[in-house]
Image (cartoon, rainbow, N blue to C red; front, side, top):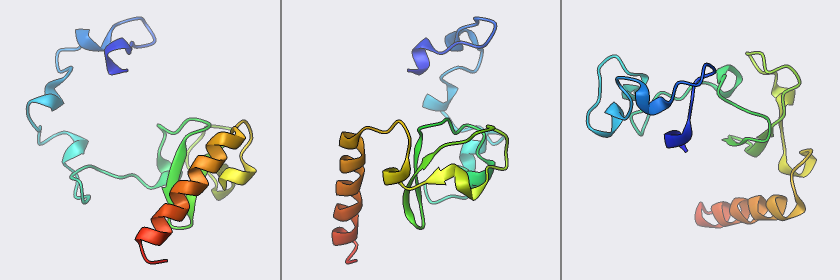
Amino acid sequence: MIDDAASADGRSYSAIPNAYLYRTKLQDTCSCTGKGPLGVVSPALEYDDTLRNGDIVMTKDGPRVFQSKTGITPHPASAFVPPDDARRLSRDLKARIKELELAGSVAGGG
């Protein structure tokens, strides 16, 4: 949770002067005022340096699990694997992702 977040030097997120400012107003200088459909900037996945191994992302080809060997951007296409090919992903989670994928294709008419 953001309330428990801290910087590498131990400084708590809540100690930052602008902490939680996003809850009350938008700043013109903030990336959250991007042109995306929800008003937030959506970086291309290959340049998203917030991704961590095991993160599940939605692509035009369906859900993919991020598995980077280097963590360096741009991430290669091979860093995004289908859930069935993902290491360290439980069978239960793989099944739940497949259920969501099927539900989405039924709802979307596919």
